Image (cartoon, rainbow, N blue to C red; front, side):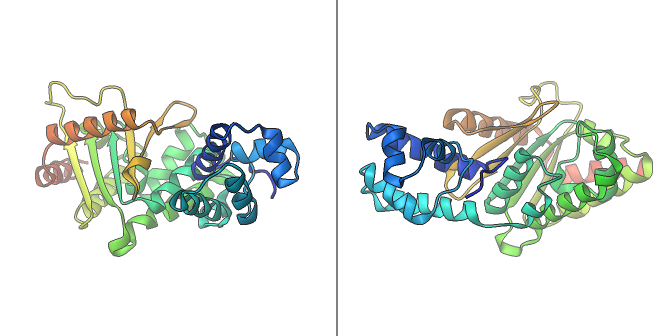
Length: 285
């Protein structure tokens, strides 16, 4: 299998688990390579997620590592199979960063998505014109000839919210500053706020606003998102820096972010008053 330029989180997890099993069995990379009759470099690439692994190869390694837990074996086989499957975002590999592709993959599997935003409307709720402004002026600095590809990629990402009962539950808390932004001018912002109102009335979407009048809150360190997966122990937190997207997977840290989000929701206006505030601000534009 050809090496991946940007291994997904699923592939990284699979590789990390295989490395842990190998080391737990007291085996070296040399021994694992002998099991598969391959070079050491291939084992290293598998364990870092750069190479996929075939079903027969996985079975051979698990047997060599002394794995007898059928549930663990099946879970790893599922991860390996998912890593070989091509999804719609694979077509956008030239314009989607590895971190963003990871996010899309996780969102497609999620039961719940939580987002705390301090400056921007979250990507799942953005209008195309709002996206264009951000892509031109944001940290990505997208060239004009790639702009529409980025917009199409994000619009396809938003389809996750339109999948009926299979759609994840989206809970968003916005600091009031998000609503006062002037990205693209009054018309773009008016349409964006109207879209927020429309989306917030969907059954599985909740939008709350944390007003300026709140004297203190737990979100002062910046925006973050939580991807709630079917297995709660696999939940992931997304944060962003000026140049990259970072993921937090440590259980204790993820739990801390979940508590922080619950506290932000409790401090924010309820869904009804939040919508009233958004409507009021939209009418002033």
